[in-house]
Length: 478
Image (cartoon, rainbow, N blue to C red; front, side, top):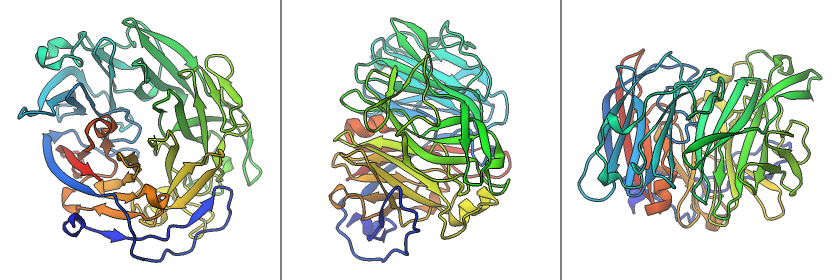
């Protein structure tokens, strides 16, 4: 079997626990399983041998989980973005059929600061075929370019030169959005492009939406609240916070899913100042393209631009967890072919400590990954994945055509579980330390949906500020 060539580990007996359970899971037994998923490496291509490299906030600017997207596919071409060693933003493309290789364009913008938040995100508006690029922002105004019409819908008809992109602007089109962080693009099933971003800062910020139609951008407004009193288990009260998204994902029926964590602005909610003031995994959805938000029971809990989702909105907690476990923000989410939402979270379980005092060190040593899935009754089930991430970094979640789940963990290791087992038979299906991938990676979910191939964008680990190669590795799943 192909797993004999790849590094393997088969651990089944993953504990199933309701999300309101307080008990810690026992050790996992190693038993033979019947998992169907597999990951076969097809190719590993270097895009840039000297990409910009520095570490800040435990991350690098060319690979962060909240990029949506750094690599994506449309109309038979794949696109990727990164910063090269000159600090310039680069956008590449390649045809997925035939023998054409990667072509690159250097945009007239240099990264303004050594901050791993200041990522590049790509979006494509299917109606007019424009490629949109948002970049270099952390509590600052956006840097944005949009391509000529038809570049992405008729790629072979357009040369890949800097002339196909407009000037770099500090607005989204003509729309002034103010200082922002975490730019994300998402496409509705109807082909409408939307833009998600946070205004304000960590512990005191608002998630907002904008929408692209008829060649122009319009601001829809904020849909989360930064204010309201929240009482921690230690009795401290915080009055400001921000919602960190695990993603924004449309299913085939047009429902927009959003899993998230909260971060409190008042760090007195922590048992120790070395912790991370994140708590609870929440979930809301929208059936009108982000205008109205509902909890799992279908009750309205927010209206964009008018009545935001708040920390005390009823019925939005999917998995309760206090702020003393180093719960990571902005991990990952996905929906399967039945439109069921799933999320991946990671934190330090209570069997190791109930008071994280150094979240970076303790997450690397004791952090564990958990898979959450929403049942037909609206309740969530949580299972610990019996493969520790051994990293402070985040994991990406995708599904193959048979609804087998794949976790692309830090450093490019892939762990999978079969739908037939209800995602309990977690197995390492790919592990190649020689890739030398730094921490988090980015995945192309659009290509996976189109042809069953998972493209993983990663950068090699380096030292200090020494540039290192950026790659795209392609895997056949299933």
